[in-house]
Image 1: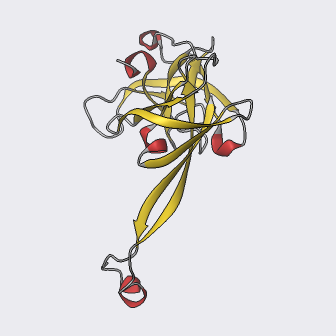
Image 2: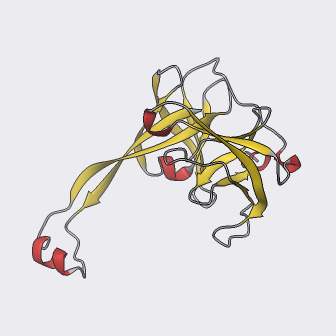
Length: 191
């Protein structure tokens, strides 16, 4: 599990608003570009540097920095994103990396012991434990949602981290707080 820091450029100012504060203080300002930092986690899924994370961790990123568990920092590039499922694949140029083993998440059952792993805010690895509370959850009412709900705490900054079974195999990608959902079962993620 890795830490992901992304830098996005956003424009601010120069846009009229219905906010009275804006009309008084902001009117006439020119748009400015500023950098916004994003943080999250990711999971190394192949020895040659492919990493699975949440789309919202890297969306619109101008630059992505990955910090490995041994503290190496490497630039990453976005390979693909799916905003609807909030998943993204990024790539770093390293070889012989330790990669997670995928579980067949179709065999996951309510009551199974799971661990939620992350690397929030570059502070290091975190692990919380719990059980699978429910399967097939949908939070947005979209037809393709198939969340695994867990009572394992998914801490801020752990978006994009791993949900693993008791044998350390990847079951899903942590995506939502406060109810602790893990997005899309791992065996469906890379189809």
